[in-house]
Image 1 (cartoon, rainbow, N blue to C red):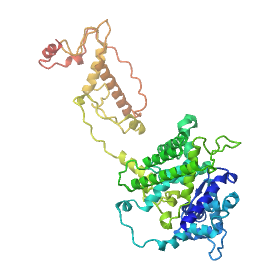
Image 2: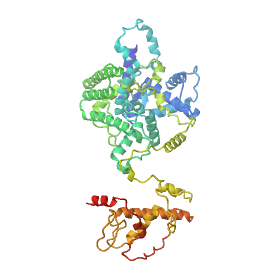
Image 3: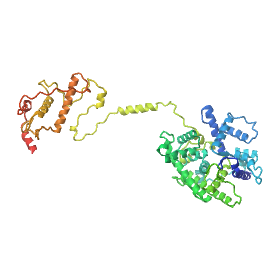
Image 4: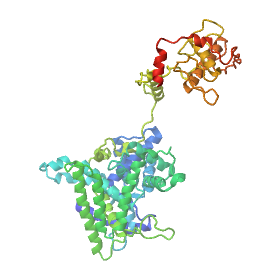
Length: 579
């Protein structure tokens, strides 16, 4: 019974593919199978719940109840015994909008259009309405279940390692990549392939991509293509701004688009459909098994899917070659108002083979375990978890502020902790004795001007010059002043002192160290006088009165300077080093 029904459904899909250009705008419209219809319905129910209750979610029991009512209603069968689900009209509208937006149709649409599209040589009605309902709902499989052998099959290591769920997910990824080459508007196909293999495009990246596509009113794949192309070819003036939400995912999106471009190159440049299909399947298989061992479940499932798909592509190509009439599929038929409209001229025969393969995949038997189907982890093959279709379409929850400490407070406390750290003493060199003592920075002094803050000095500040009990610093300042007034050939420390200098050209030349020391002493004296007179330190000091001329002649020496006697033996030691 199942073999006969499968053959009739293939006939129905073949007629639809041959004549779909009469009723559809695009000739690359793909078909959603029974499992795909259930997943789209789940997303539609969750979207309606989000609008009414504010929560993007739905229970499994609610999905199954709406699924049965939906099949009966769309097939125009009696559904009086089943209560009307809540907000069913909105759910049906959301479901139809999703199919139209993604350029897809479901099996019920194909079944409804068969009568309009069939020709005289085609069978009138391959399936009845009740048979179609039983196929989609899964009642035929349950009725055929007792005929299967009761004894279990011999356990094998391969079957234990590669679970049916992994096999189903891997095969869906293969078909999604091929479907994306045929129908670039299929958002469901991009959902399965965006992060398979792992490209660091998880839940947050998919949410940002979905929001960007919603803002631009375009498909997900077109949004990725326009964003990456604008960065690669647009230049600085046309590139998206740094604040664009997809900027942080540009690496993963570029890797995804580059892989799709490679597949499109194979599709357009390989003339033989069988060879092109095998190359495409091999490229997808190489991307999925990269970095995996031979015993990995994903590796085993990829090998099995690759082998079966290559065999089926070869069979479909042989059927198309041997057929005299052909399938009549022409996905590259040019339009009068557009060039290369929704298709590509290269690889026309390969596209025919791929579309026939995808139609057969859509006619596959539905999954028995609906709960496993709706909650299966599509990211299981890239190492992550918790990425079922419903969770992937659900936006991440925004922070509610119920954290014990907000981010702002944590940042401020960290900055205060850094400021309060004590600066460790640095290791100073052997010339540390020549460094100045550490003082407060100038900005700290200017920030808090006060007369109570006396600048730190190495030597005590001198009092007025009239006092006789001045310290040594005052004497050194007077010595430095008298040195500038002395004539040629005179020395401040005596005849045999090593600190004397010669004068050339009749003018007094002062050594650099003494000039620097004199300037430092002047500034410190000015600051001390400003403090004593009550002025602020940051005010410019007043000019000092001109110094009185020396009473003695140019030949006389300063009594203060002469009165300072040398230590015994200092003259001889100085003379020795002078040599």
